[in-house]
Length: 89
Image (cartoon, rainbow, N blue to C red; front, side, top):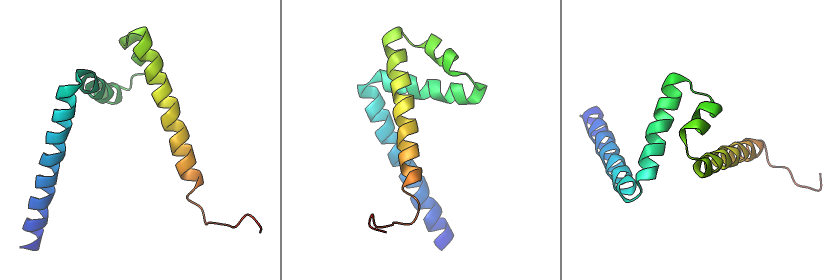
C-alpha cells in the first residue's frame, strides 16, 4: 500500500507542476515557445548557431546571455561543492 500511495503522491505533484507551468506559460507565450524549442534542440542535437538562427536578433542575444549565466552558475555551484576551509589555513 505504501508504494501505491507514493506513486499517487508523485503523480499528484507532477500534475501540480504541469498546471503551474501552463499557467505561467499562458501569461507569457514566449516562455512556452522557448521551452518547446529547447525540447526540439535537445531531441535533434541542434547547435547554438541553429538556435540563434531561430530567434529574432534581440532574443538571440538574450538566449546567449542566459547560456553564459547558466554556465557561470554551474561553475560557481561546482566550485562550492568541496570541503569548507577557513581562509586562515
